[in-house]
Length: 153
Image 1 (cartoon, rainbow, N blue to C red):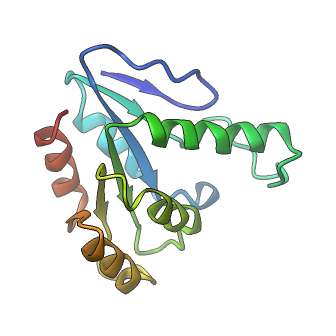
Image 2: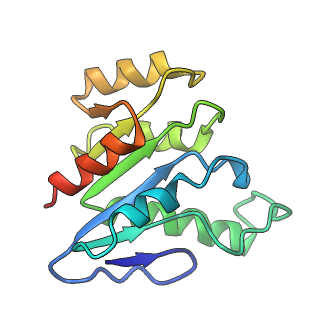
Image 3: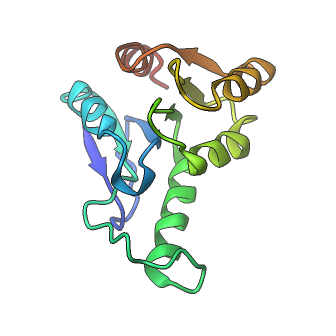
């Protein structure tokens, strides 16, 4: 398995399934669920695209003119487009506005799997969008891991 984080170049390993870990980060305030997924996929044929940047600086202005912010957003969009599977985890304690945006952008892609536990503030919206567009849903991180392992491309 290979894990790629921004600002690393996204170079997909041959003969692997590429998984993008979209979901709650909330400027570093959400639990590091990405580490749980990554650990569970060790020694398996995956390229994991993890947008949780190790050197994120919360003081960066979130404007298109900020080169670090612009590069981060473009890295994420590139990764979402290149991924075979896009996981989306909506932590109940988060707002996850960017993940909600990404859900809308990729609802038609046929490569989403959504984990939206009870307690997420917009679970109803996520459930309706998932049902309407035939997006697979799971109830917890363990089921999300199982989904990834069994739906290799």
